[in-house]
Image (cartoon, rainbow, N blue to C red; front, side, top):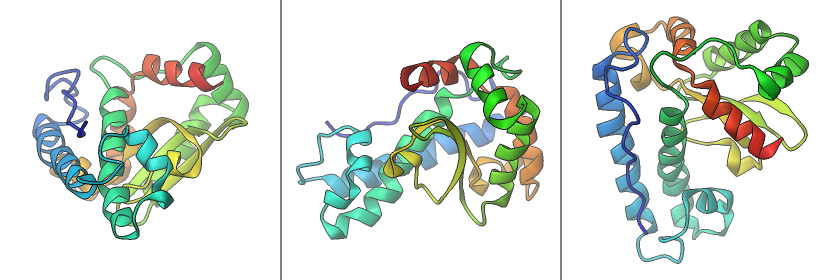
Length: 201
């Protein structure tokens, strides 16, 4: 079954004032849709056309050589953005509690230090890409990936990712990526992140 763009679980303006409605609409309806269309086109006629996006991305090396680049970029873009939309919500933010909160404090020293390190990974990503909180098989870690690469291709489980492509923030924040990252924390749906953590911890 071909990939499809998931509906946003909230309205385009639901994350205002942190992320503006116009950015959300263009990001979801144009950018994400383009990744889906291009991924479907790249996989059409191959044995991978009906596989899950996770299956495809964890087996990139098994794809025909001429498909690997387009699929890495576009199926990766589909996967990353689906996780991104699910990781945010109106009236969210704050700090996680429970096992996830404990693991973050234990790994990074404090929630504030975790925020600082994830922000640094996002600000420090040259060009376009993502900053992630992942479970690497033994515990939590922060990684950054270029373009639409993602942690599952490296055997990690992404728990939370923030898009630092300019299309994610430029209409509102222009070149102020650090300001966008500061605002983004107010949208994080920690309940969803905690569910992902509980599934792998």
